[in-house]
Image (cartoon, rainbow, N blue to C red; front, side, top):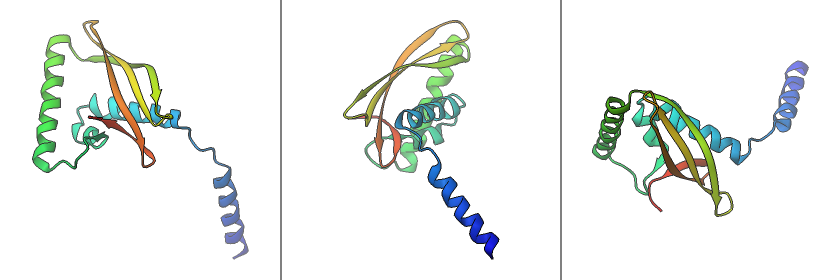
Length: 133
């Protein structure tokens, strides 16, 4: 019993000493997860979970958006080859760090590079891609 109590206290002390991740660290992880782990691996259903459309999507709307993303990705791959890498180049913060514009470059196998901007907002303890203002 004494051992369990000691382990519980130790776990609480370790947990209290754990460093909280900053919003910048959370933003970087979010962008990597949304873009690289989900979008670029064609996992559009999970990618769309990271997007705030301002309204709840029904199944038909979700399927339509998945199809649109897939068509665009297929078109780009036929035109330029597969994505070679994505590089986040800048983050412009607004509204007290709760809204950011993430600038990134998508490079393709044929050396084509496209720059893009993604608006993200920190709401309810998590980052979301904003599809509208």
